[in-house]
Image 1 (cartoon, rainbow, N blue to C red):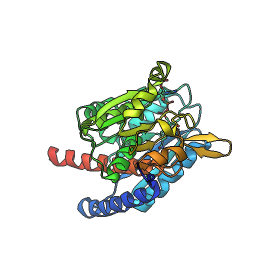
Image 2: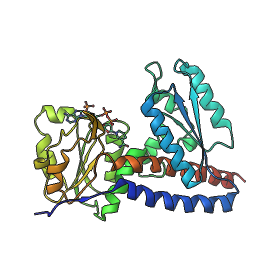
Image 3: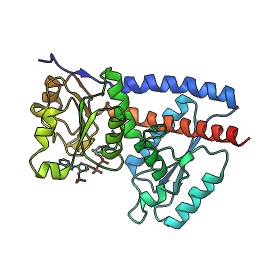
Length: 294
Ligand code: NDP
């Protein structure tokens, strides 16, 4: 029996990671005489998108990264958006570019994301970076899966040979995460809506040494489904009445898990730091390319 899970404090982990990145940026400044310059492109002004951009700005400032938010009108055409991205791609002083989600319905996020040159793709959405990740090169990876991996690493639990179950197979969370878990030699099962429809979700969850849930439905995973001693990472962010809750029924799950992330305050705070880490990696990659071409 587990006495009760250790709560994985995302704010504390984010602070530790930020402090380490701050040191790294100071070192890069000494080495190259400049710091990463990142540009976030936001279309329109959706309040939750603005809140996320504000937290990016704060973290960038703390770490010592230069960060610009470029807001384009909600009716910008895809052609003009791509032209804007190409202009940033061509600017030597810009090291990282991202397209803020959500985008309006007339914009094809995947097609536009693919237009960001891979070496400036700070969210890891270009197919070239996704392909590299599948082949085990995890230098630039999507931020939320990266945050999940940081939480798992912070527990000290090795993934090798463990049963890892991911619930949700979205392009930004579940799918890339399954590759990262596989890269660390976990035995990975990915569940989705058809798993639930087939009535098999609980049996997969019961096997999970490490369970990651990214569904977007409040408390869909019940605490008594969880294996004793499992590591539980809850990616879900849901509004329930006036509260924010996760996808996992927290109070009952914490009685069975060994480690569990809270919502809010678990994966979210680490995600934004992972974005900055990617931005630092794109900066380094561009300098390495320059060295090679000299
Ligand atoms: P999506 O809606 O894109 O994906 C949800 C996934 O859950 C789909 O793969 C879907 O399967 C699956 N699913 C839906 N219902 C069930 C069910 N009953 N049983 C099993 N699987 C099911 O969401 P995202 O991946 O973008 O986000 C998931 C959650 O994570 C959201 O709450 C979001 O707010 C949060 N999030 C948090 C972040 C953070 O930094 N903390 C960042 C990104 C997201 P199918 O496609 O087959 O229907």
